[in-house]
Image (cartoon, one colour):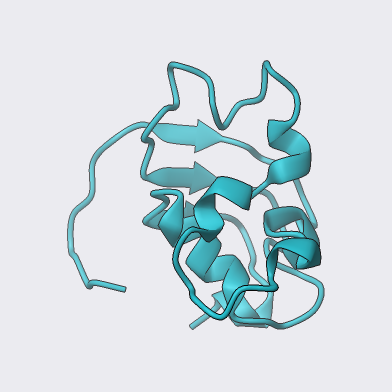
Length: 103
């Protein structure tokens, strides 16, 4: 990931707590050896709702995700942070994070 000091843009007010890595990117999408292209499968269960917050016109291309406590809990695997990055998320703001997202 590329370092930056300032970011401005729309924030997706997701707010859900205890979002685990299987919600971020379900394991069934991790059968690829490349790290690119995972963004289209990120939050796939939530995005299956046509009125989901991620694909709304207002939030399209938003670089900021606002989440609840314990974001990224569950199994520690590399693809979830990469899936967020691939879908255009550059920053996640949350009260607390699981270890995989805390570094």
